[in-house]
Length: 213
Image 1 (tube, helix red, strand yellow):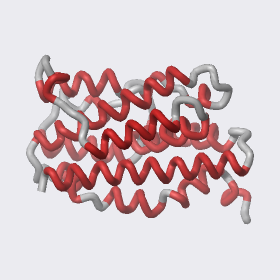
Image 2 (cartoon, helix red, strand yellow):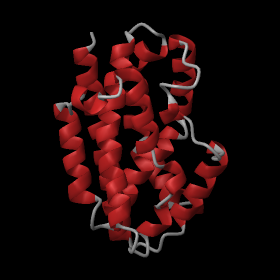
Image 3 (cartoon, rainbow, N blue to C red):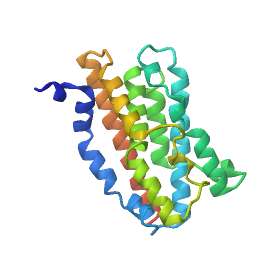
Image 4 (cartoon, rainbow, N blue to C red):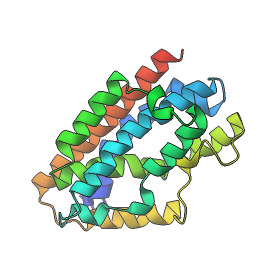
């Protein structure tokens, strides 16, 4: 095994190779990227993201005293304020009364609460799955949405990370991940939870696709 292959970030990339490909082929994502779906479909995705990121960012607050997890608490990445701004634009001032969690979202949030509030392996797994995705493929989707739906500023703040250089942040994040002093057993637990997070996201995309055929 080469040194690179033994790095945790490389192991994570291998574990997520197939689910990343499945997510990229999502017909729901394709429909948003091309503007084939109505704006209401995008609004519903944003609403589901609000439930997920609220759970994840509450986990960040719960894990700030953990010596490993606190290395991955990055307030500059927090998405709840941006999502709430988007939802006010998309649904109006009473947006909270107009959204509800889908079944897949409820399952996803339950998993975050059970895995990420008291274990660093679980917290970091869900953290890197969401935010690294937002800073890579999510940036592509954000650009596509601007073109497809004509957003100017309001409505897609979720995709805008003020003061963050996505490629640089991703590189530093992977370095930080590779430096975590986990045992092999802890690394395996982390990778198992990353795989679970990807499955949960794929399940959510599938439910959204069913609703917006």
